[in-house]
Amino acid sequence: MTPAFDLDAYLARIALKDAPAADANGLAAVQRAHRLTIPFENLDVRLGRGISLDPAHVFDKLVHRRRGGYCFEQNGLFLQALHALGFEARPLLARVWLLANDGVPPRTHTLNLVRIDGRDWIADAGFGGSYTPPMILADGSEVVSPDGAAFRLSRSEDHGWMLERQGDPTGDWHAQYSFTLAPVAPIDLEMSNHWTSTRPDTRFTTLSVVSICLPTGFAALTGTHYDRRTGTQQVEAEIESAKAYRLRLNFVFGIVLDEVEVNGLALY
Image 1 (cartoon, helix red, strand yellow):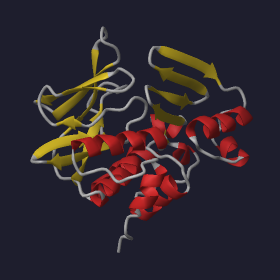
Image 2: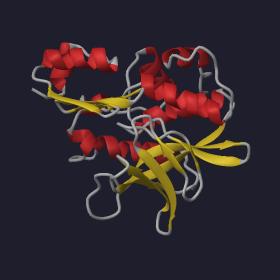
Image 3: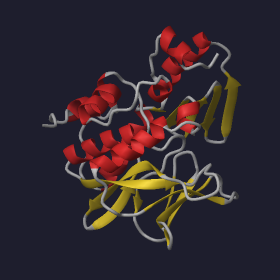
C-alpha cells in the first residue's frame, strides 16, 4: 500500500507557505516553486546506484534528503503533489528530439497531463535547464519562460504533439520533444526509466548533469562546466577541482555529496 503523501513536507521543500488552489494559477505556482527549489540531476545514475521510481523512495530522496532527480523522479513527485492538491492529472511519455541523432528517439521523458475546468494542460517539472510553464493543450499554444525562451505546441501527424523551443526572439524554433495522449502505466515508466539510466553511451550514463531554475534564468553543471544565465547575462566557468565542485553543488544547487561520492563521478 502506497503511504499517504505528506503535502506539508512537500510544500515546505518547495518554499510555498500555503497550498495553491487546483486551478490554472495554482498549477503554475506549484510548478514554478518546484523548479526553483528542486534541482534536476542524474548523479545517482553516474554513481551506479540505480533510479527507483517507488513513490516513497522518490519522496525521501527529493524532499527529506533534499536531493534532485531527473524527469522520472521529478514528474513522479510532481504528479503525487498534484493529486494531493486536488488536481486531475496523469503521466505521459515523450520522445526527446533535442540533441537527437538521426532516426526516431525512444520515449525517454515523462511529463504530466492535467485537466482543469474541462481543458487539458501539459505541466512538466522535470526537463533540465530552462523550463516550460504549464501550457493549454491546443494547436498553436505558446508560452514564454522566465528566462525569455518561447515554447509552442503543434499537432504532429507522425508523433501526436510536438513541443518546440525558441531560445531568443530572433532565433529558430527547435523541436524539444513529442508526445501522445496514450495512457501510461507504471510499468511503462519503469521501462523507460531503466533504458534511460542504464543504456551505455547515452547522455545520462556518460555525463554528470545538474541544473536548477532561477527566477529569470537557470544554472547548470554539465560535467565540470558551469553555466549561469539570468536575463541577458551569462557566466561560464570550468570547475577545476573536486573540492570546488562539491562547493558549487552545495551553494548553487543545494546538493550535498561527500568527497567519496564526488570522486565516484570520475570528473577529475
